[in-house]
Length: 188
Image 1 (cartoon, rainbow, N blue to C red):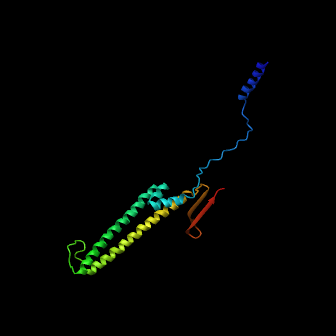
Image 2: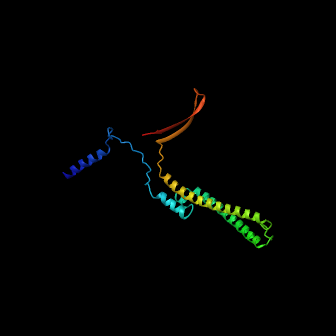
Image 3: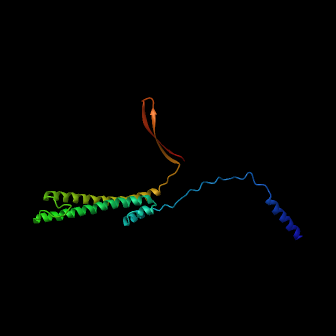
């Protein structure tokens, strides 16, 4: 008796394995999965902090590796000119002090043959160029920090295919000239 029941249940179970698929079954299309990254609101400030500590580190944090040589190239060049102009200023100042003491000519090959007036001009020019080089170095340093902050902000910006902006120049035959046109579209 029990074996007949087991046989019937087994046959019903095996029979349902070969049954046809339901053709009226509602198939829900799968939505494309979005690559959602968690927005880190502290990422821009972190990148700016890193760039303030070590120039170029904020660009490294943002994975903008190509900007790092630009930061160090700009700062290195302006620091080189700062040190060079400081050396010229010191040389001209020392020579000017010797002239004020009464020494007319020295064997300094760079500024030894200049007069007092020429030494004053060289000294002022070197000082002005040195100060300008320092301001350029500080400007590049601040630009490095601002760039890291803005780049971190823009990495969190959503760029979809649904939003587009298409500028175009179109010829207008009525006025026989070109007109600028812009199209801004958003797909829902």
